[in-house]
Image (tube, rainbow, N blue to C red; front, top):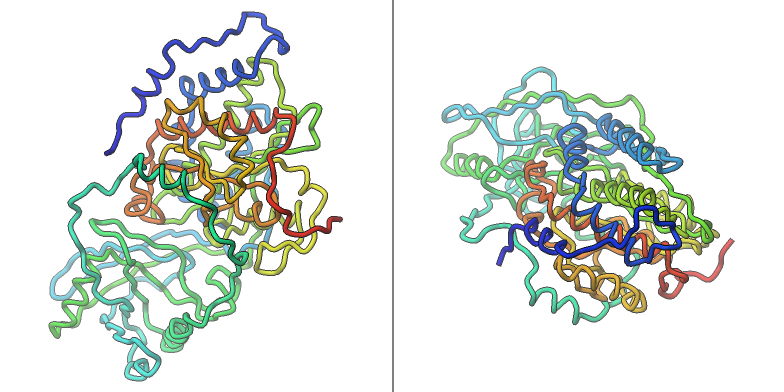
Length: 531
């Protein structure tokens, strides 16, 4: 059952909440519980997270890695953090990332058997075409390498469809959902996930035909390669980056040879395939103009600190990735997480100002870039400050002294849904710390702790080198079926009440991590040596 609205529950949860703060209270007079109540009041009643999310999406979206828009978003974040009195707010450079890519114009039209405007989007790092090009559509009907020979010499200047028809089913249930009690109970009762090798980025043998097909396509030089995604309908189009013809280079790398590539809505893609099966040869036109850099550019993460007191040499790090794909404005992936973490920084600065109490450990906010291309920014950060790792892996060879000084890293990157608890990444002892921290938020539906892992985002490099790294459990809402990497990933699909709840809970976690006597318990260290 979908439970709306959260705003009413937040309001009722605040009834009877008293701050116990005398007008001229000194820091020594203020209890931990009272500080947490200040955090809760600022986070729930005085939230700015909606405005932050609107700036990141409507003004600075999309934020493709290496793009001018992402650079503008970084500068805005630094300026915002400085205005909240965070220190050393800065862009921390890493790279080189690759060439920049910015879409300036795109249009696609169909003319056979009659005219219609085509719903499609160019994949990132697709090259420009000269003016408007026009050509016949060919369906590349292949399943093994031998099938390609039938098309040799026949694809140049053509629009090539490389997927089959995908059956589309009507939605009889809403795509958005909340985690139900049974779902949360399953998570709470689950044991730790089985250990598995640390992440590697090497291609596998199962991809050999796909590589062969793309090599063939780049040799044949069609006008454009057209795909449809495995999911998405009703105008929702999912897409990411283009495919290079060189298996050793990604499309964003300097010198990569890349064809114009487009992802089309499934309904229009299916129509073209059906026409071809009827013996009708469709015709398409394409206009595509992009701006790219002449050479590879450096990227940068955004970092800022709030200095600690008696434990200032230790850190509590919290963050989210700032970059996005380009079809929408990067709202649920991941302006949601970035806006929440910026709001956490603002809540904490306001709390410190109001109570006069400073954190014992140094707080660090991090907004990562290059996440969508493989966690590149957070990996670069971990390698720069905490550990030397094996190539293409999180496995550390040696640990740097700063690795031992990070109590925890907290991450948010699963869409707009409210927090329901936290993944422990198999760190059982951390659960005993987090249980009393979550208990005050049961009225906001956040109570579940699971030993299970979750992957695909920036806590993994921290966890990989032995730093306690955590991602929060979130309601899925419509992240998977509608907004993740799609043209529908816009501000209108953010739930501001959920973001307000998330920022408040994370601010409380960060504060308590900073103030406790001990650091967050660690799992077994991945290596013993340090330097």
